[in-house]
Amino acid sequence: MKGIREIAITDMPEVSIGNVQSDEAKTGVTVLLFDKKGAVVGVDISGGGPASRETPLTSPVTADNPINAIVLSGGSAYGLAAADGVMRCLEDHGIGFETGYARVPLVCQSCIYDLGYGSATVRPDSEMGYAACEKALAGGNPSSGSVGAGTGATVGKICGMERAMKSGLGMYAVQLENCGWQLLWRSMPWEIFLILLPEERSPDSGRRTVLRSVTAVRNCGKWGREKICLPAIRRSEP
Image (cartoon, rainbow, N blue to C red; front, side, top):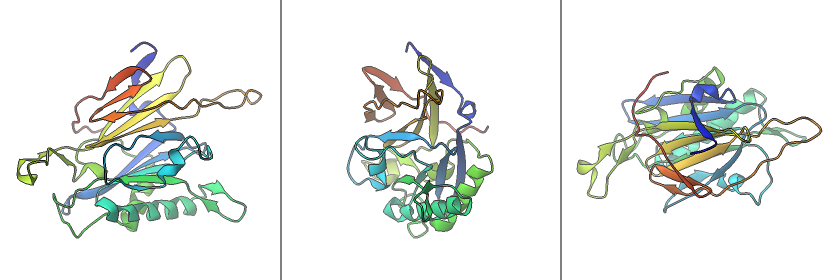
C-alpha cells in the first residue's frame, strides 16, 4: 500500500511489551506500555461478549487523554482483574493522568475466552498483571505465539474444542510515511487493536491526531478504503 511501510516492533521505542503466563494453567497477560506521552487509541468491537475495561476511553467523543497502557489477557471476564495490578504498578512508578489529588493511570483491557483450553479456575489476576507491567517497564519482550495473553488462545471452536486449533499472540507494525505516525496491530483470535502514536510537532504548532475508522475482520482490517491483512501468527523470539 502506497505511503505505508512495514517496520519491526522494536523500531517503536514508544512502546514496550511485557508478557507473563502460566504454562500449567494455559493463560496469561500481555501489557503494552507507552512512553510518558501516552498514545491515542481507537478500537472496533466486532461480535458479542467483549470482556473489556475502559473502552470508552478509545471513543473520539470522549476526552483525548493519551492512554498509558493496554492490557490483553485470558480468563474471560475474570481476567479483567489483571488491569488492577497494572494500575497499581504504574502508580508505584508515578505514571498516570494527574488529577490534582492523585495520578490515575489510564488503562484499557480486553480478554479472550480460554477457560476451555487450560484450567477454568486459574485466571489472570492482579499479581500477574503487576508482573507483566514490571516486565514492560524493564524493557519488555516482544515475543509472539503462545506467550502472555496468547498462551490459551485457540480458534475454530464452532464444532467444539476437540476440533479447535492452537493460535496465539501476533503483532504487526507499519509506519505512515507521509505524516510520520505509526500503527501497531495486536492480533488475538477475534480482535485487532489499532494504536496511533501522537506525531511529534514543533511546540508552536501543537499536536494533531486524525482518527480513522477501523474494521476488524478476522486478521484483516481497513485503513480508509484500503484493506490491510496481518501475516499468519507464528511463534518468534526477539
